[in-house]
Image 1 (cartoon, each protein chain N blue to C red):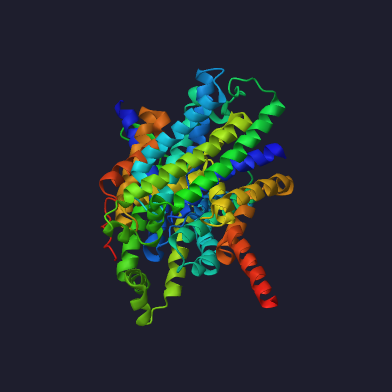
Image 2: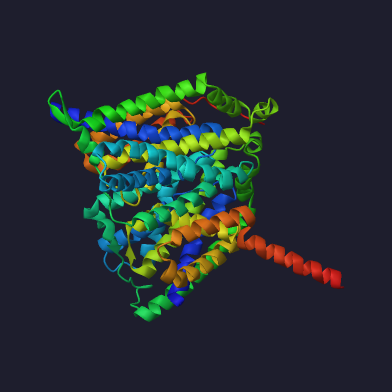
Length: 301
Length: 294
């Protein structure tokens, strides 16, 4: 492997890790607060991607300049969070918080099955490609390699901003502190007058919006086709589980680890591309079942 | 109709594997893995040993599923709930991508053919073979169903069910929950494998779709439809599911998963007992009216 290939693999890995982190952080946030693993998270990601592509095509067809591709991403993410995520929590998930964990998993899995077909009904099975945003930002020459500005600079910046922003939001703002308090002890939080229902709704909307944002940002870099949601939920679960469920900062590191592992596999032994993330997860979980950054749960007897 | 019922029975046997796991409170989103491994095991047997007998194909497929059940089980038996479900899903996705990527060996998305084998070294016509497979599946379904129910009532099975009610107490009894879980996991892998190899032999072809998450989801759906944890419910559920699917796919083929998802939600939210639960309620009600009538 020469330097050029090494750099390409490195850049691929960083760009991919940034995307996976954005999706995975939503998953881990929802889990941390609501103790529910949202299997439908992958569908929200896919729908974010589809919506952005359609919206961008529509805006461009309306004669607006290509720069409007970026607001389209933000709009899609917010739409996914509010229009899709909000009702999901409000109408369905709210009914199952007291049910056994198996049923919670089954409910989100059912939502996943429904949303997969909804995508196919709306956008069909043909791959969709809309890379205006990618082309608009052009290429950059880093060391001896040409790489797109979008993937090498924009995506990591968004991911890092998100990480810092989320940390600030949770630790420094009132809404964030309410979320943390509810996570710590739901009953005690309710006893001091926190509206736990509202906190859960807000968390789910933010988490779903992050999945949508991940999809929106991914849409210019890849062709969107059925099945990307299933791939993404398994991959982001791998990231989240390797980090330890509910660990936001840890998810950033493991996303990088898994992203780099995957991109180097692409250049060294392409067939194993899909395997590497899971091998990393399996290796970590064998040694530390609670994840790299998780702490062992206290046993209740 | 006969082939349809054979397929339903094969699927029902696989669903029994999920049902057994549900009795310990765990759900797996990746049991299609063992379904596919058994079917591919059978296909490889027929490829490497042309003219192999049904018994050989069946046993080798089952052994493949059992061995992989032991290997995967050694890893996942330590986990519960979310981790258990998702790790199983991850394993099945890995196997699925191997099937798709290494197409020199597995035929990629086109899959592999399973030519009709001899039965006890007797050549069979298509019609006779299908009839034979139907009775074989029926016998297997009844036999394995009976065995699973007996197993769940056996001391090992009772311990297995304790994982759902109180795992800590199991440890206090001096048992290793991992080992108990492992027993049940291998049994469920064998059941799924039996279903998979039967399915492959009847259809005559295996594709990577056998291992895809949609297949796993379908199995979980049928298990919940039949009644979570009810072994006869798994078979009845599979039969109803296959029949409805065959006739409904004409006008609901595009939205089939959506229909499944909606039904799954309805069952979980309004009829958590599934078909077995509804049947029991009905029986109780009939018994109740009789008592009042007397």
